[in-house]
Structure formats: C-alpha cells, structure tokens
Image (cartoon, rainbow, N blue to C red; front, side, top):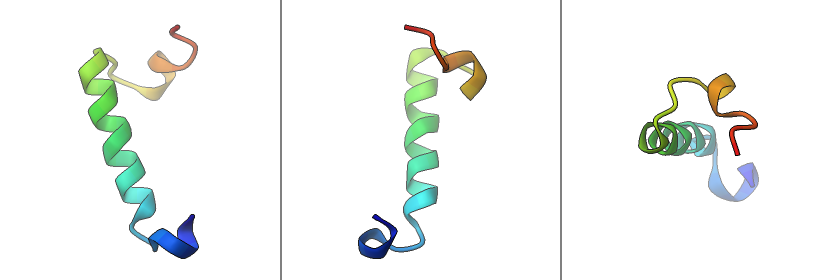
Length: 36
C-alpha cells in the first residue's frame, strides 16, 4: 500500500485510529484490543 499511497499513509492510519478510538470511548490501543 505504501507504494501507491505514499509515505503519508502511516499518518493517515494513525489519525483514523485516533478518530475511531475517540468515537468508541477508548483512551489507548491497549484498552481497545480485544474489547469485543
């Protein structure tokens, strides 16, 4: 995916994860892992 999306892909993934975690009420990745 990096070949097609470029070096900004990682930052976009992190921003997306932050948005989803905030939406679902998680404060850390560790808290979100295995929550369902």
